[in-house]
Length: 183
Image 1 (cartoon, one colour):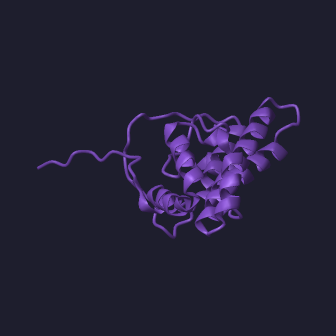
Image 2 (cartoon, rainbow, N blue to C red; image 1 turned 60 degrees about the horizontal axis):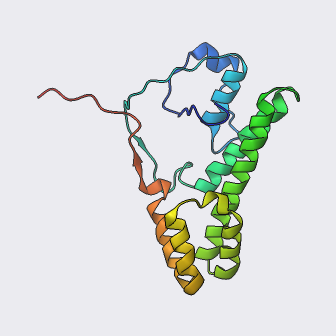
């Protein structure tokens, strides 16, 4: 669960006794409180099962807590750091936590670089974006950088469009499939 290869969402089911055993949701967290809950639950020896079927919808509004990718990344870092403080220093999960913290900080730097470009500091933002080249795999990003090398001013509208397109508040995630209705 810590490496996010097994994701959980707030729309999950758990035993009330397990909820009480971990102290419920951490009310000091504005983001990733569900992830934090599940990490703490698994640290107590819990088990999670995956149902490979969508059973409902999850809507993210532009103003909701999970609409900001930057706030979500910051929330995940808080969960990783909290777990690292809780687990013994020699626990095998510590290496995974260090990797996830580093990866999340890189993702945060990537998002901040895009913010810098959108806000108008194109030259510095592009330099910072290049520093996160490991996140920029693929032909599309190579093509973007080739265009920006010739016309850097295009980075701002292109990344503004990308941010709008990928905005969590603009999506309606179908995590759960509705049962067909009888006619």
